[in-house]
Structure formats: structure tokens, C-alpha cells
Length: 129
Image (cartoon, rainbow, N blue to C red; front, side, top):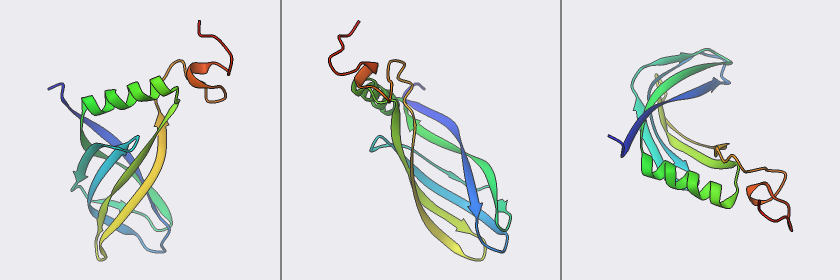
């Protein structure tokens, strides 16, 4: 089905505590460029060592039209990166559910974008080719 896409997200978990933690479940939503993009969950437990980290994969579901719309907007605006936000909750063994909210950016795959220059890689006053 082209309207719905399933893909794997790799997530890094960091544990600053002095004891190991086991995450029982993760529920999350992802926004891309300020718009709802994907959602998913994991019910596979993962152990995060004390003062360490663990990487794990979760299945996410999104709409292809949302991704294409955001990439087109980034290309039109000349933006080399798109902001993302991931929110949700992680259920930790012996602790319960803890909410999280993280933000960052990902490449927009805009071939003509140059962050050091203006829209579509041209400086002010430059004429497009």
C-alpha cells in the first residue's frame, strides 16, 4: 500500500543512573517539520546498563503523502534540514511509565540546498541557472 509506509527507527536509550533499567514498552509519535508524521510502539523489553546506553529498533507507521509534502516544502524553501520531534512514554520495570519529548533535525535530501548560502544554494543577488 503506497499510502501507508512501515519502517524501522533506531533509537538510543541512555541511562545516567547507577542501576540497570529494563524498558518494558515504548509508545511514541513523531512530528516532521511541525506536522504529525509517524507513530509506533515496542513491546520488546530492552535492558539499559547502569550509566550506559542501548540501541534498539522499533516499527513505525506513517503516511507517504506527509513525508512527500514535507520534503517538497523543504526543497521549495531551500532548507537542507527538517526539524523533528518525538514524544511518548517509556514503561520501565519497577518504575512505571515516564513521558519523554525530544527534538532534533534530519537531512531534507534537498540536492540544491546549501546551509551557508541562501535558498537553493544561491547568494542574494545571484540569478538562478
